[in-house]
Image 1 (cartoon, helix red, strand yellow):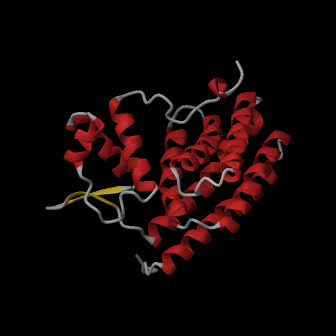
Image 2 (cartoon, rainbow, N blue to C red):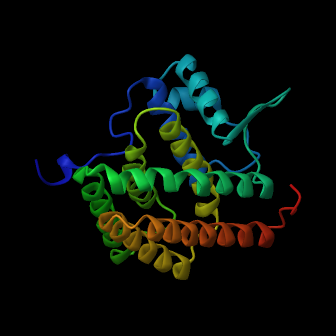
Image 3 (cartoon, rainbow, N blue to C red):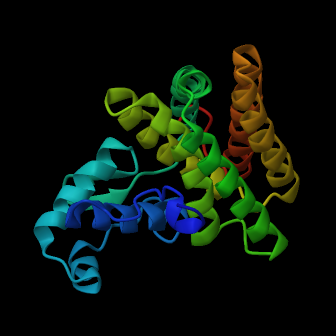
Length: 234
């Protein structure tokens, strides 16, 4: 196979109605359509998406596990507030486990992982060239697909599930810190370098690139929280 149909798409065909609803809600939260502290309009969303309340409630539980929403007494489901502690903790865990997946990608010999990463790297560049906004569903989709292609190397199981959850949690903060053209340009270089190091089987180089990439994303996100007045001890 060749072309777009041969490329793995993240959540291309959600396995259940719950998966579909969770993806819709997740994207709205990560992109800031549903803002921190806002009550999630469960009944309205059920009508809009044409689903019953049962899969919607199940989707909300998924997003609660990703620290994207909270269920609060007398308030119901609300979008989780941005937190310096959550941000630091999420990036610290991601920094510990994403290199594991990257090492497996380098050692697996599976050509589809690098093929898919290179495809989505190209898609992100194409979107940038077309001046598609950094905070957009198209850019989020391509960025997620790039990293999720890498996460496939983790195999099906607990590592893969936690990588996907952590990435979505971290991406919410990254998206909130945008637009930042300088950081986006640097991230594009880092993505390309990661592919290069994986292809070369350079495990030390992989660690170096991922460490720099995640630290830069964390720093940019922390700066946004500081500028937004989010308390350092939150």
